[in-house]
Length: 315
Image (tube, rainbow, N blue to C red; front, side):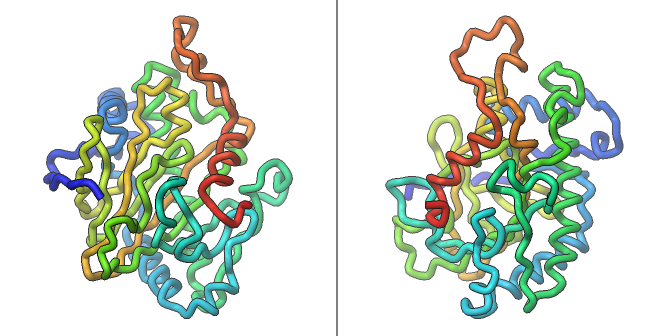
């Protein structure tokens, strides 16, 4: 567990995207997103339009879910479609690391017409003992997905591409949402993480973090930085697929969580991804001048490979 540097909120990029949310093609905001994604690949956004009442209610419902007995949570245990409850120890971000201490509850877009085209499609398994979670979770997924689309428009503009470049195949996306619960790590085992160091698998991650803290990101020099909570903001992580798409220009930043606060920690996450057949090819971004050697991959194939490595139930 490497030494962590405490940083102040003003040292982290905080970008107001309200103009993008309002439908504008704001080049200045796009340039800010572009710059932040090249430097750390990790930024905060405000003006995102997510309903703060929805976030508060979903947070409270999430705590009610995770505080329930394991016997109840097992009734909605994770399916082969990556929906439901993942208990502590069921995810491992690195082969050499201990399994993650966290718990998760995952849901996604229910698309009955395309369930055979990728394992991440399927029916959600909502808990009867927290009945409001279905309504709140579905509303969050819809709202957060819209925010992701606004960001993808901004990234396209920042790269000098047409505004809808990254949104051409998004009518049946593989996006999923999750509540991620980090109990306090009372024993402070130096080898145990809430979630171990990793980069995010997919295209883009949006994160509502509470005020407990514990999220840490690694800069280009290998230094771990504490990412302080900023009220009303969302954390944005560039994922591996967006980094691949931009030939590494956008950084998929390693990050981890260590909750030694004495309190429980809960995050609300959207993992945004387009259709499974979407071709992730840096040649389409860079153009004919591309000199790299990254192969084109599809979104669906890449996620399949990464999930098999990270989640024990997949094997």
